[in-house]
Image (tube, rainbow, N blue to C red; front, side, top):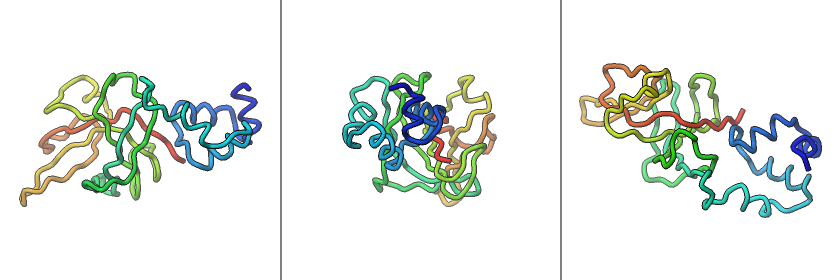
Length: 174
């Protein structure tokens, strides 16, 4: 079955199927339901090929917080919310990944429900990718000793005490 045939059977466009396949759109249970019905199989038959952790091109990122309206990140702490599996970013061969969900704010073209995957950076990484207008998470010290995290677009503001991570992948939900 071609991608175009699958799209017709699901009742969507070939572009939507392509976005799902490439991890640019979240593969929800509703989508898996439609695809499994079109392929005349159960949802569980789709899972091994889509979510095979042994695949070198698959990466996992734990969702660790949500984006607030002011650009700050509300961390979930040690709470296990959920993890996402997706195609590994090409520029990061073995990254330390985590994700932030856009909850009640907006960041660039990203909107509510989108998942943003960040790669941790070591110390004060000054690589060209950090200064090219990509989104980064910075830690800012407060007078109380607490640390707050905000998402900025590079270049990094001088008030940021350290760079923690850079956006490497987005999974668009809308």
